[in-house]
Amino acid sequence: MTAKICGIGLGPGDPELVTIKAVRAMEQADMVVVPQSDITGRSIAADIVSRYIPAEKIHMYHFPMTGNKADLDTRYSALADEMARWAATGKRVCYVTIGDTPVYSTFNYLRDKLLAQGIATEMVPGVSAYSAAANSQSLPLCEKDGSFCVIEMPETLDELPALLERFSSVVLMKVHKRLPALCQFVRQADLAYASLFQRITLPEEQVYDLLTQTPPQDAGYLSTAILQRREFR
Image (tube, rainbow, N blue to C red; front, side):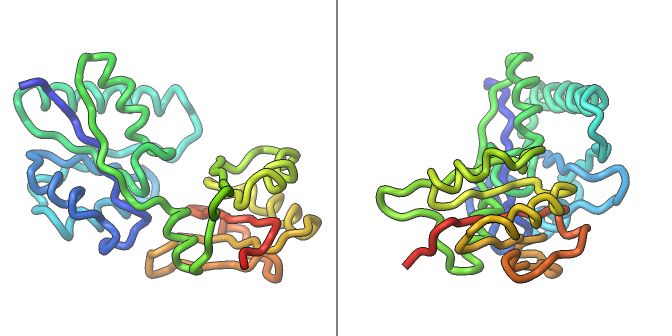
């Protein structure tokens, strides 16, 4: 049997938003690798996974909360090597990630390293944070003949006016420390809608109307923003 490792999207954080297919994949796995922060020690993914599979299947792996790409790459390489060894012995191995697997997830980096070793990969989709955010407000992102874009919060916001003219909605992921710049942009732009969603679907979730509210500085962590130039009717 060809070794294959599965990346599973768990959705934005609410355990009820995990798909049936994701649960089945975890149940059938021999080992489920769950990422955890070195600093906080908390893992939203672990909180979700523990509801569906026994603890003996769960393998916690610690990632540093750092922007040091060399350090992260070393960790990804070490984990990919370990997962490849497990898969080579016939174990069914899964790696879980918050959100939707192809979108800004750590599994994308592991996938590259696994493929380089001849290990096949597959992905199980999860509900994205921006989809959960829009649904929470009954907010359309686009309609017929329209489109929307999803980008990482840029260092400078010079490109946003053109994107807002071109797309029905602009979704900004990984807002984090650039929240003050976003708030300043919204105050100066002529927008119909602008909201920041922090920890969406989690018990501590917060939704800020950026047209009327100024969020606290720490609200940018685990946050997604949705901007619209024109109102949907």
